[in-house]
Image (cartoon, rainbow, N blue to C red; front, side, top):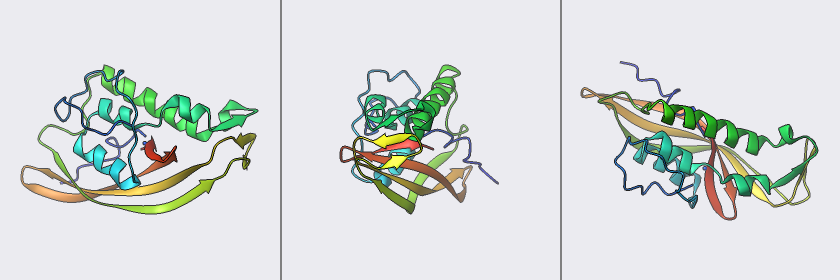
Length: 174
């Protein structure tokens, strides 16, 4: 049995997934405030704990904070804003279509998170046509989880990007 996770984590750090809605619920969370997490692992754990696109959308870095990170001559060069915007749009489409993260009967359990790379950016650094206005840190992580259906389990892993803004980690792009 192969349970593919690629579609599950198509979208990228955020509200702590303490939503009062049940797991898998994709009710609108426009009023949800982004609060972030202490570690990249906490972002990954939140995704597994509340596998709904609405909850994952709340894990994304706040657009206002992302927009204030850098000044770009060409807005397309702001890769963080581009990734967060793309993720938001994909989550919105899945929410509108009432899509679920997991197929019926599939459960997920967090196993671990491996940090693949981390990079710190300082105020004044240049990236393409952008000047960093506020320091931040970005990381690539690999989420390991066990997916179970009908008593059969297998470990799946999926890469994602997270970003540390104002001391909190947020999903940038799954």
